[in-house]
Length: 176
Length: 353
Image (cartoon, rainbow over all chains, first blue to last red; front, top):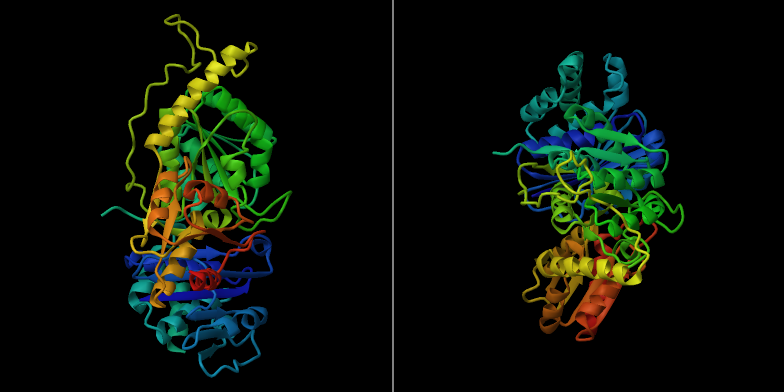
């Protein structure tokens, strides 16, 4: 099985973090993975995106024209990538920031007010992790427990305060 | 089980270099390869090595020449326009017979060009990297794992054949992350560097590292001796990957990141009943001429796929030597060809067969 994903949003929203976390979890699960970031001016703010592939087979091209999953965290990203999602695919939208619905009937659209939820729960900056929780709920890409454990284990001891916040954010998204 | 780490291609080059005993790094920042310098700056002091950010690319390549002359494993890295600046130094290094590694993480050109991935320095790497009769060993990785393993291999080959080696990557390979296993590649036996200018200690005659020969006959002899080593390299060190070529009517020829796009295209084309394979040169010099010549007897046509306006296609044509038609498809300027484009170009070609 192969799952292709595009994470897209604004610089600073944790787009690259989310993508890397997906790729890392895939690697720990002994799958083939690639993580292809956008680089250049995006790294200094503006729009940011990355492509992640998790597969049981050898991965050819690391870039993807039609992803299975799209995670859109701002309107320009939604407008740019929503038409490209593969038929039968799923999009995850931060509905706090994207005041628009998908008109496509051949894909599943999941709307979650991640930024709003984050702010209400003292988790500002964790909207991306809330969406990760929702992805785990809606797709069968990774086991929730295993994903949480890998995420926690990748947090260095000096940043132990982040462990609870990440766990809480994942849970919020998963149960939304 | 060996432990895999998720790393950027650029970081994998740096870590593999250190693991291979590289103790000197000289660089000057340029996108998309700056992570190599960054990683070296962090790690080199911890292993007793030196990472020096030079005042320019020209300074860095000449520092590399000095370090290599002492017999130390040393390297520099840059991206396309930066490599052009290093050109004079690279020629001097070749003329001095100094083993070292030069990394080019290519971006679009000509001129300052852009910062997105490209393969348009193929001519530069295999033909015009410096003035004079000279060759570089040119290795083209196509995964983050190979960014690491071919860095190690490049150092070994450079030492064995006593000449500079180039790792020719691109911005996509430099920036993308994949799992790497640093225990998965073998180390080769390399000769003792009896020529190194590392101090006589009163025990031997002095060594001289030099590329200036006023007497044309003497210069001709040094060049001929060097070309004998090049010939050995061509005989013994050609590396390539063949993928589904056995029954292929069309053989795609691609290196680096483009080869991976071709593999994805081949999966789709095979599903559509079109027999396509891939020949992926891993050494761009020496180029895998022989295997292409043999494939020309079995297949019906070739399609060279590149991120340029068509450079490697010249070498494919030379190797195929008119036996079968050789076509070209490419995107340039930092545009990565899509799988769909390669599928559609190959289908068009298949209809003409």
